[in-house]
Amino acid sequence: MDQHPQVTLKQLDFVNDVDLREVLSERLDELDHISLVNANYSTVFLAIGVIEGIFKHFASLYKADIQGISPPDYPETSPGKRKEFDKLTIEEIYHLLSKVGANKLLAEIPEYAQLFELFRKYRNYVHPQVQARQRLQVGLGQAQMALGLLNATIQSLDRNIIVGKQFFEKVAGKPRYDSQGIIALPHAGTRHHSFIVLREPVDSRLQLSFSADISPHGLLNFVFDYTNPGDFRMLRFDRRPDERCRNGVLRSTQRYWWDFELHAVPAKAPAKEETHVKIDIDFQTATFTCIVDGTQYSFVNESDGKPSALFEKVHPGRRVGFFNEEDTVKISNLTIMVS
Image 1 (tube, rainbow, N blue to C red):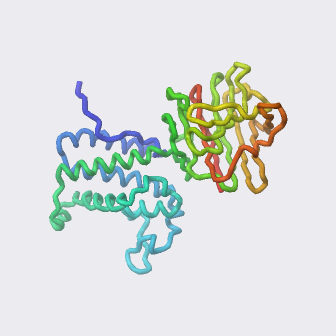
Image 2: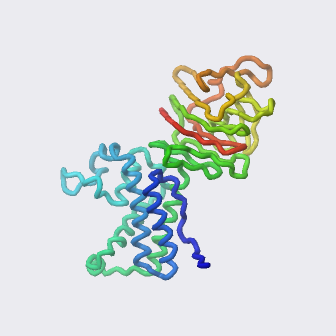
Image 3: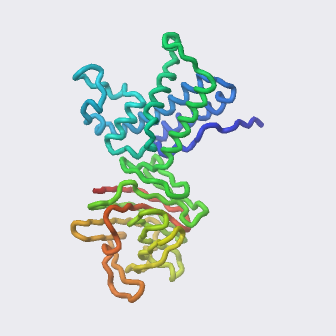
């Protein structure tokens, strides 16, 4: 049996175009083969081509926003003549994405733009006349650097799950977002299992709705007031049959440790797998509402059983997200408005 070492990272779940993802995966597989036989030109051409394909995919998601940028941030081919969108280069797209709220797409490394520009020039050596004029060589060092840039780019992007224009950061596990618009939060062998949080903090208002596919022995935590993996609150929707397993608000004060603060009324999630949830946090009106399958939840204190306002447990400038603890949960029909 032929076994070929893997030299490229293969995690492309951040590309939600399944056809493009398949094409990119094929090229990554080919890079594994050609890099081992020192096919340096081909390695550079393919590696930088994959990066360009990924960047153009994200540029298409933000096309209207990018086209609304004015010079000098948006490049011109001559004074007063804007460069055509489809002809934007890797480094230009990288710069423009940072101007439209996608600056968390890649790690903020000042040298990135220069590296993308340099290796785009190397990639242009697919035309022999260009290389002959510039008299630069493509050898093993350049090929290894191109692979390193590709892997660093993929690794940086793999921190994200991108839903529309909203970026979720992976905190734990291997959450995935597929071409059907479903976020899967699989069991991952740690107490956090699959954990994601929205990168954008909630300063004024959050309007969130989703459907959750929760098994009869599973639960879903809607995380809010998130600071770090050991400092957050969460609203639990629990379908486990044990009567001690209830809906409510839990507080985490250290990693992998949380306690009930509030119990929810009703105490158990509906006896069906797909649950529809609406969350509205509004700091102007001092309200935090949770509606599950048309029923608005209320809450009582764990300590004395007295009614408690859910809004008292949330603070502006913090983030929200999801994680599971018991079984794979699937989230669909997700809509998010953050301000």
